[in-house]
Length: 349
Image 1 (cartoon, rainbow, N blue to C red):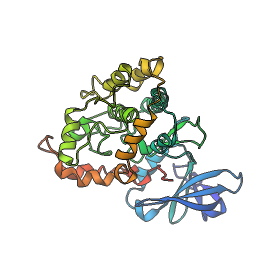
Image 2 (image 1 turned 30 degrees about the vertical axis):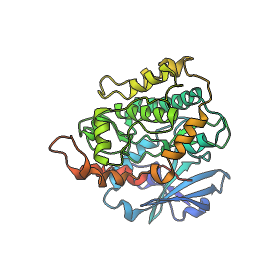
Image 3 (image 1 turned 90 degrees about the horizontal axis):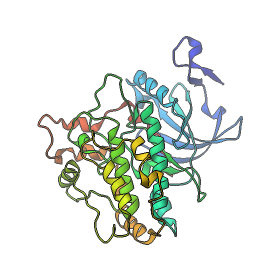
């Protein structure tokens, strides 16, 4: 039996009290596990609808309850066709349960590799959906801060499936009195100003979208080095190229679009709104030539799951190698201790 938390005089009426979650949902199978939680495929008994239920032990949230409740309340306001929705929240004596929209189409790179035909126009369509969703977040004052390919999921297995943004574990509200300066995200996708420990804004998401667009058109990342210090140095300098022969058949419009997003100076970097108006997105400059063979070959080579599933904690371990940053850089800040980190909405299938 579920009860609204607000009935007891609390101010979190969105959180429903339940004695046993399995009275409301039939748990089917485990979809994924994380450091603090387990995600289960579940059927709502009253409707027969399928959801992904994230089960979080309260002991993992100890001391962070108030802040977490405030941030989840914000997440519940997010309603966009290209963003995985947080549908409901239940609470028992020992657990918090996040009821999330179920997406079943798999991850971005996996689907591209499996395709037999893939073009610039396909990449443009994907990026347009991401831009539209992130523009919506930005309009609400929300910065995602961890946009990367594995956080982009297909809604269903059908060929024309839309793309969905997941994982708000590092998301942050602007304008809360907090200057965003904590270094966080995933190595390879973070903007230069984040690594430089400078105050930053929603422009960091636009940089990440540029990196994703780059990879979608060639199959390899714009920044890479086995030595982490050199990798960070490349990012800090925005040192990337459109290498031959991989970019020879890619349009100048696509390269211009990427350059507008991967601009080192965040004040000059394109916003989502500007990007949505770029000819490569809004016009007809994206080519329809099949680039699947070269892109999929590079994706298999450079993005084997063991390589590109980089955990957020890895950036903490690599912090000691970070060079050319301000002298007052504090390594522990790289941990990005965000309350929402415990409530990552990403599901690995």
